[in-house]
Each structure stands twice: as C-alpha cells, then as structure tokens.
Image (cartoon, rainbow, N blue to C red; front, side, top):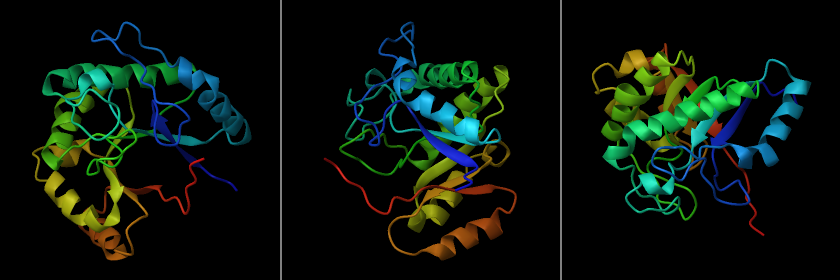
Length: 218
C-alpha cells in the first residue's frame, strides 16, 4: 500500500489489548517499554523492513495514572501541574528508548483527543494547558536532549480545528515552537476548516492522524 507514515500510541490506547504505562513511580525509576516489546516494536520492525524510509508520529492517550487528578488512565482527568516536568521527562525517555530500537519519532502530538472524556485512555487539555506543556516544558526539554521530534497540537476532530488552532496560537511564542496541527476524520464534513487553517498558517503541517471507518470490540 506504500504507506510512508505510521502513528504510534505512547503507552496504551483503545487500540491495545490491555492498559499500561511505561512507569508507575514518581521518579520514573521503573520506566520500561517492555509491554511495547511484546507486539508493537516487532510489528514496527517488520514495517521498517518493507520501507526503510517510514516515518513515525506518536501520540499519548494518557499520562500515567499517578500524574492525573483522577488517578486513572481512563475517563479523562487532567495532568496535575506538579507533574508537568516529570511527564516531560517520561516523554523524553520514551523517545530515547525507541531510538535505541532504531525507531525515530519524527512527530509527536501533545495529546490524543484533548477535548474528550473517554471510557478508555484519555486526558483533557484546554488550549492554554496544551500550549503551556508544549512551549514551557516539552519543547525546551527536547532541545536540551537534542531531540528533533516536531511537535503538533490538537489531534482531534476537524469541526473545532480552526477555533482550537486560533486559540492555541494566542499563546506567546507558540508559532515558533509548534510545527503543525493534527486532526481526526470524524464528526461530519467541516472540510472548510482544514482549508482555512492551511491558508492562515501556510508554513504549518496539517496531518490527518486518525480516521477509523468501523471499530469492533469483542
């Protein structure tokens, strides 16, 4: 099918058979991608064998439960302010662990569906919270660690693509640190929002990151 980009979840998502994080300790001393080594990384390596130029985009569905106000991976909740730096270090560890497996994360969104409380892994961010995490924590820490991963915002439905993008770019300095906007292919048409965002921010990437036609739960 000649795919050239693959989306990965950072730890578990509703596409996994079980829920997990890479760490359950405040100091991240137990950090491990061992769950990914069972199935995810072997499949990635098979894909890389077919296409050596394959690029990867990663999205977190939830921070570890201990970092959230609801203490759960599921049902929304928010990242507690005191864990912003720890969570940033968690993301750095993820990217470095994947690099050791010869998997480079080319793009990363800040949160999958940040405007939705889901019964599966989820976490809520308003525009200012998302941009604060990106501009004041993730972006500078990535630079300190020489991580070249491009950062994308939103990663949710296209009917709010324009309003969310405009709200996000009110944040001082965001334009220099945000490489693009991710969107999902749900909730009707609203294709005009994609065109409007592209016309208003022509130098930013627009990447369709999710668009399932049918889901089955057994």
